Structures are given as structure tokens and as C-alpha cells.
Length: 435
Image (cartoon, rainbow, N blue to C red; front, side, top):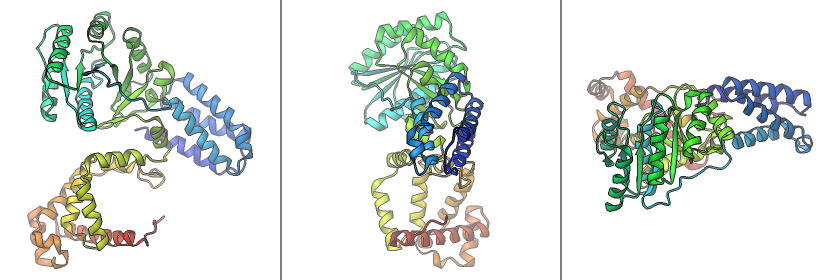
């Protein structure tokens, strides 16, 4: 997400860091580059104009002039303004109801039904409570079946009454949720290809009937400037409490994310970062600003790891690494844990300075990971615990059993040895970064 914009802004920041003194002239040069980068990313021109004016005003202030490292102060100014543009502080969901009612609205094609399922999954994992999905899109062919299939995959119940009146379905779903002690109900409403009176009247009727704690607009981040008109159209009738931006893992310029809060005052609460059903993240303006400027996002990486990695297994692996007893059996366990974190290239992008190390555009083929697993799984337990016994005949057998070549088996064993050496150095405190 935001790769092109991030690269342009980072190049501008690198230039300013090299200046020993900031003048009105070189600040104008850099802000011109920033302006072009934002406009090309489809950020609203009014937003860009105000952003640049704020940066310039602060950059020409006394604090920067007196600083020993004016370039670094300038970078901080840009980051702070970016955070403000994205909404300042993160905004949590209002889950105060019993059950809490979340009504998701949006145009057709925005990913609303899938986002409903993702949000239910997120709430269940985070709060350890029971969500109920409610199928109220009675017009789009197969919308109800799609939600039921997603609910089945997640083992989350879906309440549906077929193609009946959506307002009645919501009333009945609320009664059912109370009777069966559900903590949240998430309503999948109908969408249209464009905003029309019939759609808005139906959504208004549902909102008036059930009084949801949250009315959230699901919006495709690839819409660009049109996103503002869509948000305004929905908000004029429904009093939105937040927005979810979908498809941020795609080839999106990101302008919508950088314009929405400033122009509509609607907070972005979540972003869709992958097609998988765990591919929804809370939106943190500061973390997103850090990602855009190449400063990484270690907090999100740590939180993601904590949510999927077994703590006991991680501790056992750490002890083995420290003692130098880490074997291929452990390597396979670790590998499976890392796979739960999602696409590795997405994690790599969260590392501070990833773009400068040439890692931002790295592509990791899932088949390569599957090949490594196949090779290790073709070994006997004894071979995994003691790779030193792997001589030519055993390697040929493993290559044949995994459908890979002997060269690939050798390459894996070499990489494993290198990793063990690195781990030993890290545990002894003698490890130095190779850059």
C-alpha cells in the first residue's frame, strides 16, 4: 500500500536531510516535490494545498532555524502533518450495546459482505465474544449465500430470512441475538452501483429501527477522488460513525485515505490489507504515516505476531536457540508459525528502512515456501533432529520424496546452517547488523 507515494516522499526526505541549513528556497524545492507526489497519489488538491502551507509555515519557524539537524526536524514536521491529515488519534469502535449493533453500508463492489465477515472475525479474536452476522442484502444475487459461506468458514452464525423485508429481518435478528446472548450483531445491508433514493430510504429505515452503535461505510480505496462524494452522499442521510477502506493491498494510489478525514470528518477505523478473512487491521494514523515515510511499523508487526504465534512454543524455540540445539524439526514449527502472519512481503514492508534496503518490492513465491516444507517433511524424525547425518544417498531419497532436486536440498541445509550461526551470535550478544 502507498508504495509509489511512499517512495516519492522518502526521496524528498532524504534530500532535505542532507542540507546543513534550511532556507526558504530549498524548503520550496522540497515542498514542490511533496506537492507533486500527493497530487499524483490522487489526494484532493484542497487537502494538498493546506498540507503544504502548514509544512512550510512550521519549517520556516524558529524551531527549525535553531536546530543542529534541521533536516530531521523537517521530516518530523512532515510526519506530524501526515498524522494529522490521517485523523490524529486512532478511533475505537463503540461496542457499548448489549448486543452492540454494527451496520455496514456501501456501494456494490466495495467488498462490504467480505468485510462484514472479517470484522466479525476480528471482534471475536480480540474480545473473545460472540458475533452474529445478519444477511440483509436481499437484492444482490447470491449475497446471502456468500455471507453464509463466509460464516461457515469462520464458524460464525449467520442469521437470514431469505428475501424478506430488510427492516423486519433486522428487528428479528436483534431479538434473536438478545435471546441467544450474542455480544455483537453485524448487519450486511444492500448496496447499489450508485447512491439512489430507494437505497438510502431503506438504510435510513433500518438505522431508525435498530439504532446501531456504529454505522460504518465500506469504501473501495481505489475509487480515488470519487470516494469523497460517496462518503458525503451516505453521511448526509445516515450520520456515519466511521469508514473501512478495502483493497489497500491492491494497486491503489492511496489518495482516498489521505483525503477522507480532512474533508468529511469521518474517521477511518479499519483497513483491508489482504483477501484473507484475517486481512483486516485497525487504522492507526501514526503507524500509517510511519509506513508511508519508510519508518516501518514494528508495533503492528508485534501485535500481529502476538495474535497468531503460540507463546509457549515461541519460548521453547528461544531456549533451544540459546543452547544451540535448534534443529530442522524446530525450523519447521517456526516456519508454520510465521506463515500464520500472512504474506511475508507484507511483514517485510513493516521493517524500518525496508525501502532503502530494496525490500519494498520484494515478491515471495508461496510455492518456494511449500517446497521447503516438502523437503523437511520428506526427512525422517532422526534426520530433522540431526541434519549432519544427511549424506548423498539420504539427500537423493529426500529430493525424490519431496519432488525437488538434490541442489534444492543442499541449498536449504546451507541456509539452515547459516541461520543457526546467526542465532548463536545473537544469543551470545556478538551479533552485528551487516549494514
